[in-house]
Amino acid sequence: MNTATGDEPVTTLGITSSDVTLELPAEEEALWNGLSTEQQARSLEILNDEDFLTPDFDLAANPEVKVSFEEGGDPVAAPGDLGALATRTKYVSQDWTIFGIAYTRIYTRMTFTTSGASVTSIQNCWNTHVNYVPFRAIDSSSYSGRTGANAPSGWCKTDWALTTPLQATKFGTQGLLCNGYGTIVTRWNV
Image (tube, rainbow, N blue to C red):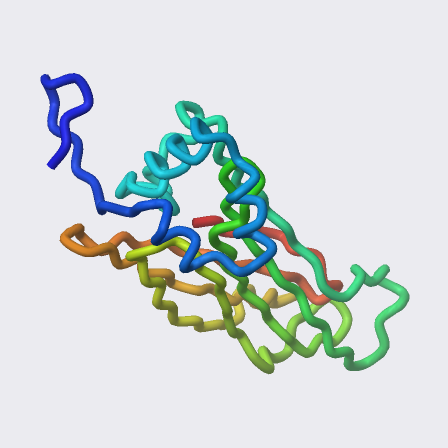
């Protein structure tokens, strides 16, 4: 345990600069090596924060950290453009960066069949992730379903679990709800 001011103990995972460079791919490692000593030290403070990558992380107090959200897939169809059946794919993703270096990306994707405004079936719902944060492991499980009686929508969710040594496992859900036109009506962000 380290102490920041001598008053309040601060827990740390013990992540060092060497740990970071071992995890990062070459292009991100080059960016790391281009950071100032102060930026590297600040990055290590953030990476050692047990709440980094969780909904509990205080983004307002850490302006160096950017969390970006993306959604995409097949273009949204106009009501008159859909024939009897169509297959559509949509996704949502979330990226975590510190000083422009990408450390984590989580991604959830759904492929579904539609008829007019209705989602008739979910063909697949899956996820993937990239994680370059030392001493953290990400596990996931995706599942899907339909909701609504007259014009059902389809949803796909991923339950994410972040495991950190000597810390409680943290959980979050990412996902999307789409109508038959392919409009993402709701998204869930970790």
